[in-house]
Image 1 (tube, rainbow, N blue to C red):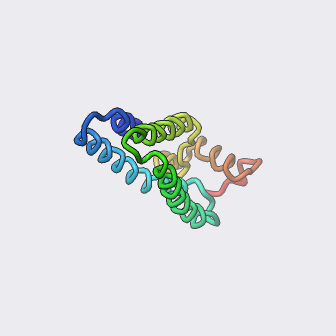
Image 2 (image 1 turned 90 degrees about the vertical axis):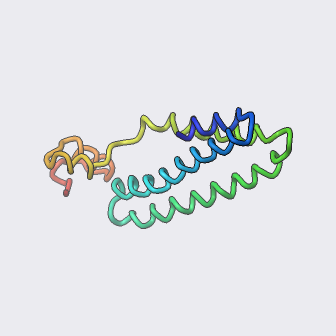
Image 3 (image 1 turned 135 degrees about the vertical axis):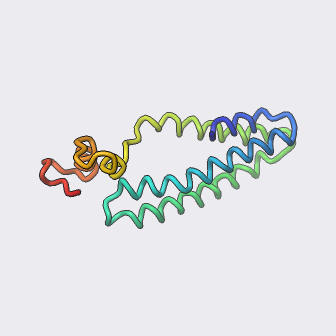
Amino acid sequence: MFLIGRILQTFAMNMICITVARFIIGFASGFSSVLVPIYLGELAPPTLRGTLGTLTQFCLVIGIFVSDLLAFPFATEHTWRILFSVTVVAALVQILCFPFLIESPRWLLGRDRTSRKARYIIKKLRGLRHDHEVEI
């Protein structure tokens, strides 16, 4: 959704197209700002859940700050498309990182209480060596 909205915004020919693109990007941003903390909370050990939730919000604010800094030099009549095209690069980076995401062990265990894949993921995330060390 980010990529579609950002490409639409970059090549917009009128204000209606920009408005629709901003709506799509806003929906995707709201969607990810809810799902990312949930995903991180399911992957993180209990001792780090609060920290990662806070860090997510901190990174969101830093992203807003950086986008404001980028907006100053490109907020002119002739260079505004450059600013919007930078967001396409960010969307492509997200798409390239997507294959490296792992499934949530909590979700896997909710579907199958004896899931070997969930136990393997927990063992990998927590740096455990043996299967008997995995607590569920």
